[in-house]
Length: 529
Image 1 (spheres, rainbow, N blue to C red):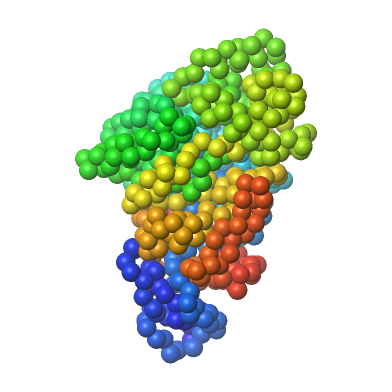
Image 2 (image 1 turned 45 degrees about the horizontal axis):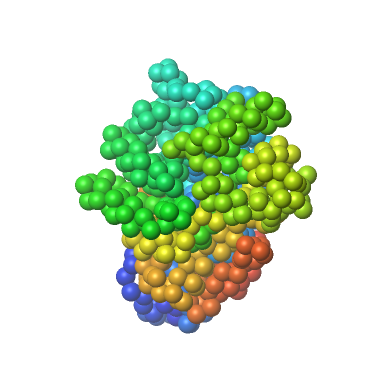
């Protein structure tokens, strides 16, 4: 007798090949049989007539790191059909913690983006950190990237300078330990301190370590707007010099003057793929992005950590210097007011002091306060102790679709948790693609969209035991109605679960059954195979 039998669904197996009607049997957490008709009984039978049966989706860009430790029953992703999340993104990961001082600095630094749940940070090494997810169990699987930011803080804090040779050697030792402990690769966010302080040579030397373990470099490039070609050129040179697999996070073009450049930028990357470089990317299907509000400030303001940043924001003379920086942008940092418009920068969550400003633009808040937008940003970051986040409208549909069509671009939510109005991508990314861009607008065929959500990311991150529905592989499975699946989350009301997903299984165990959570926690920490 099988554990689970899914009967009569249209199996879309994650390879991009056409769907076919079949039964799927599961035993011991694995796919036991895929056949037109399976007669043997099962403990649980799911009638999938008229529904699609696919591999569970892989969120290639997740910020659930702390929240899953706090609440292993998190529903935001499994409600979308996600069975695996890739954590440790943008160089903003949780390990290693080299000292109490490094831990405090990292906690303060990550508060605005990953939140401040009341959990004990009781790990030191990367391997100890991975084990932390097994303490209570987790609802879905996680794979974890080593974090450039955490590695750099462990060696040289938040200092705004290049690493010495000795410091670089120490970082390489730590990174090697992370990779040996199961990291899928290295992430860096080259707009975020301390990652943005790194020189080209530092990135190359670290990526050589990653390449030795066949891992990926997952990067938020230094610039996604006017200097995007230079930013991509830097990372292509890093990949060529180190031999690392380059994966570009949330690939997009920012600013009206760059929207029409999407094809040029994508073609350039594809030309380098043809030359032999391993290049992939991910994307979220929204024209707005989201991150910490303090990302509006020049990188030098963050030097020394959040405490030092807040001290600068309290000093009138330092505030003058900050304001002057807005008049002198650099290739790795630009004035968002000039680039996107302060009317398009929306406060999405705060710590506790200004709940009334959530959902309002910086332009509107500045008008209410009788100050200019730069002063408003500085004041909010200071008042909220760097715990404010923002949503920024910065892209267009045509550019988004151009990126989406490329066969090497996969899907990531980049979902950020918050107390106010988080970006709706946290709740709706995968159903939005399947509803809006597959069924309604026909930007992608269904089989190709599923491949981008399953088989493609599994191969890119070397999760070779899942991502495809095949006998002997892990039974991560999503069952949904292709005629009903749709996102419901909006920017105005983001906390709404999608429609049309009836069943989700993680390692053969149902976590969503008939559209409702089961309470099971079958998730595992995944390492590359």
